[in-house]
Length: 193
Ligand SMILES: [Zn+2]
Image (cartoon, rainbow, N blue to C red; front, side, top):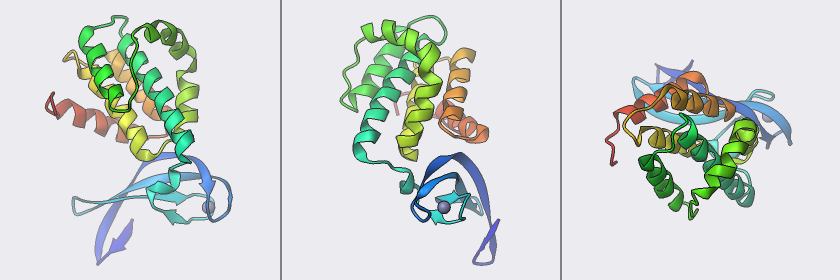
C-alpha cells in the first residue's frame, strides 16, 4: 500500500520472474505490481526484489531480435497446444489461430500441428518459461489473450483449454488471479471484437 494524494492506492502483484536489474547490473528477481486507486487504473511498475528499485514495465523488454524470435516460437507452440488441448482439432480454432498469427506475419501451416503436437507435450513449459525471459509484459499478455480467443473460437472453453491457459500463464510468471481476470475478460468480450 502506498499513499497518493492522501488516498490509499491498492497494489496487486500480477507477475513475477527474473531480469537483468539495470541498477545492480546483475540477475535479480522482480514482481510486477498493478496499481489501482479508487477503482481507477494507475498503471503498472516493476519492482526489483533485490535492490528495491522501481521501473517502467519496458525494463522487461529484451533486445528486439530475441523478443521477435521468442514471440514467434511461443505463439506457434502455444496456439498449437490450444488447438489440440481437448484432443479435437476444430476448424474455427484453426481459423482463429491463422488470423492471430497472420497479424505477426506468421504463415500458419496446419502440418506444423503434427510436429508441434509432439513438442508441446514436453517442451511447452520450458519454452514458455524461456520465452517469458525475452518477452515484454505486453507480448506475454498477447500470447495468453490469443490462446483464450482460440479457446473461445468454438464458443466453449473446455476444461483442458482453461487448464492450459492457466499453466501457460503460470510459466510466464503471471499470478493466478491475474490469469483468472484475463480469462473472465475474454469470456465477456464480444466474439468479433
Ligand atoms: Zn535491483
